[in-house]
Image: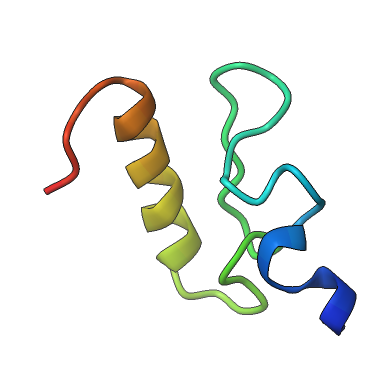
Length: 59
């Protein structure tokens, strides 16, 4: 991982909020923030965005 792949650029500019260009398809793999390893945090963050999109409150 290099500096140009960090923070808001993961995995690419404009896709750092776990949403993909395809409606209903979310990214939550190791290439998403805070990726770089296998931790499950990116899946948790993607689930949070899904709940927001569904109009649900995150606990």
